[in-house]
Image (cartoon, rainbow, N blue to C red):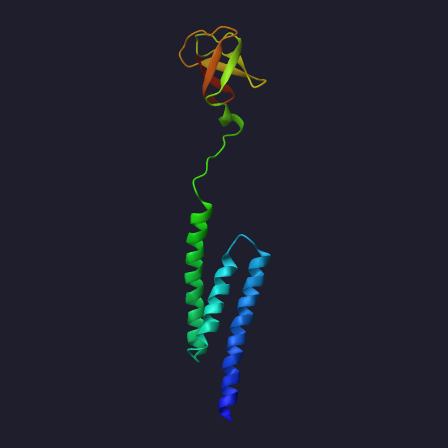
Length: 156
């Protein structure tokens, strides 16, 4: 007589862990990309499997927590490895100007305290020479670096 009730309680814990697993899976679907709730999903699935081997609810809870932590670590390193590959970053804005060529439209004097002007991709920039040499109008220069709102250039 008691055996049937005991089996019913054990099967309820199996269903309890499965329901918890489904809830965590639904939470994960509601917050894609985090993989946070997915670890708890796997922990609940492992705890549901543990109901076959143990009757202790405390042990099942410990298995749930340790399975969740283990799943979190595995998912963390898998996601980190998968999505943080070294990717070529495209330079944008001002940093994209380094290495480009420009045409001098106003003489760049040899004195580094004075500025000339260059045209880069349709934009006009103030420029200074890195070599302290005068660069004439029409010369092509290479942009070495950007300091503030002016370019440091070298004659090609």
